[in-house]
Image (cartoon, rainbow, N blue to C red; front, side):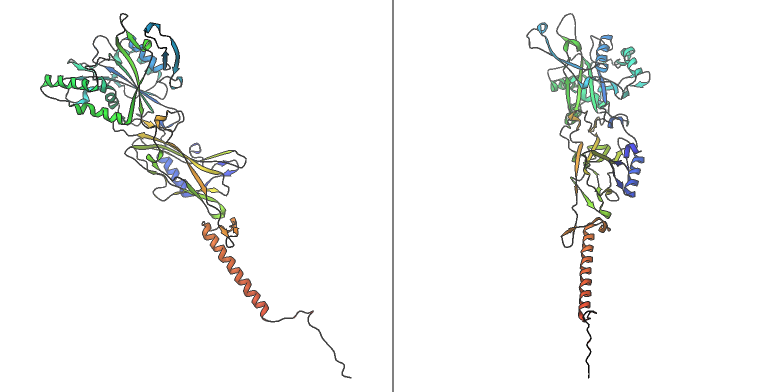
Length: 489
């Protein structure tokens, strides 16, 4: 528990003290939401979707050559080879090779894998028939966690994993909508179905029905109309999901080395077999914290009993329809007189489930109150938030403040520093002297200063009356009294 909350924690001779109500509230928070998702850590997790085009007819996606290329993507570092400009393909020379993602393979411990087949038949009634999750020996390959057993299964049973559905009618790839559709097929259904980054490996012949996106769709709907006498699947149904994806994601094609990742047959330059890698990058590079939670832009540390400073802390949910807070951490930070950095956790929140709404912190019974002490060592609160992007289709992306994350995962906006402004000492003696700590006894230094001023006035009045009392009657001193004797003789 102390590793999560660190309260109370002595740091460089400083102790952060908390009110009992604040500590009880946070303990309830922790006991009610101790679940920590792997995707809300500092490590970046991946979800890799292998999308297999069922329309291809002149080769088998389950052959060993395709498997080898898929394994290169999954288990080896991804590289991009840059060639010199040359009109001849064979005269090109390698200028440099870039290694992506820190040289880490895409599929490793903590990551997940899905395998999906896609195509659409002229007799299909709905767009839902476009894609399906592959299965092998009773296991559906949807968000399957990495393990050595899974790695071995991919190598030994690839032909079974990449098996297409038993479909007899003419199929259409409609490749232009393939990635959005397979993404919808992998929609989060469980709490474990969460990820920071999503990659799609597409196995296809890149054979389009026509030249572009809309012609590809029109060709299918026209053929379906002639085949069935009506439009069972409308263009709006096909385009709709793509529009949802384009609102929240940029589909980035990773430009791999053609010789390594694209196959050629009979010496021809025609690309008939392709294993292409894409990344779905969330459009959250410019995300800012106020879109996720409401929080104070600065916090006033008020001087209270015994001259100790305290602050009130409140965080409220903001756009719960768009983002859901999975984890939140807030900590005090500053330096002491020796220049040593200080840090102490204020609160750690982790949701019970991915769909559990964020209740806010200090929103029900009023702000949480934290007593800091007399010294002004802490100058800001550092707040970090992990949030689930509720895109309405995939709902699996976790935006993260991790410094290892790419900017499009919202890290620049999910880290904020809230400055702490210390309330100046109230003045007493009619503005001449600061209020001493011993006179801070009500918790409100303004009231304390007023009471001290009234006390000073009362003492002055008492002194004045005492002086008047002493000067109203003349009382000579012993030295002032003299006696005289008169001789009567």
